[in-house]
Length: 297
Image 1 (cartoon, rainbow, N blue to C red):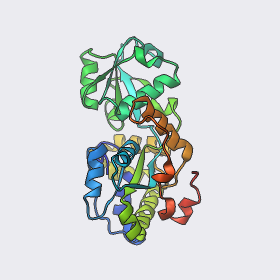
Image 2 (cartoon, helix red, strand yellow):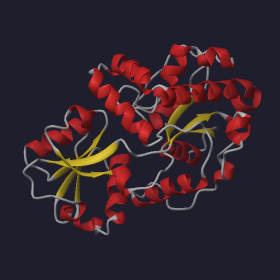
Image 3 (cartoon, rainbow, N blue to C red):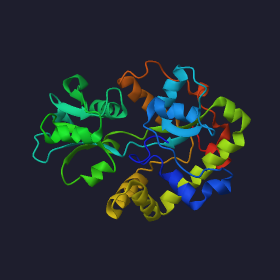
Image 4 (tube, rainbow, N blue to C red):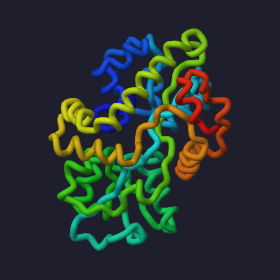
């Protein structure tokens, strides 16, 4: 699972494990193995006994370009609501337009934080060449640069943005500037999918039940997040409520328009240059019937 412990992508899995949804669906899932994201997560998945995991769309596309035996079997998350950019309370930066001619801390070049910044700039009609992106190496590092005056703004992600909300002023929330897009997907190997489709189907179904449980009882999900992330009850509840409001977690169905928005973003950072033929990368046959019928490919 990509970034479990810092991002909320994996919350439905944690709920599904706690509530026994995986077991009832027929999947022997007892824990979440976290990873730093990107190619590291993909390699960890391919090397595991049960080669299934959730990764960023960019990582799945990169694996395909490298000729790895990877197939996308479900949508994971479909919102960028957790992303934002902040500045200091007394800063002259009041809007996205004010970032022109300024320095903004991102986590790393060609990463998701830079992509979302460029997408927001484009949506707001700001020339990206007028905004200098400074790689900080991490969200906390970027905030340090902001506090020291090295940059005029810094990108941020929940729940860190909630924990520190009293220290900064929000320049933009990505969810207010951008439409929903597919941000993470479930992957496995083609060989495993062919040999054990029932296993993948049961994992997707268990996760789907976890998603519905989060939406049905955000308070219970927040209590689990509080323990897993070591957050205060207030921060955990606000984080979950924000993502529930944005419908961050998908049941697993595919939305062509949301996939293409991610492609547009990846083109902005030069991660990909051509359009993506999703038919060569997606296998929706293992989606539960109630989920598959909702897909729009």
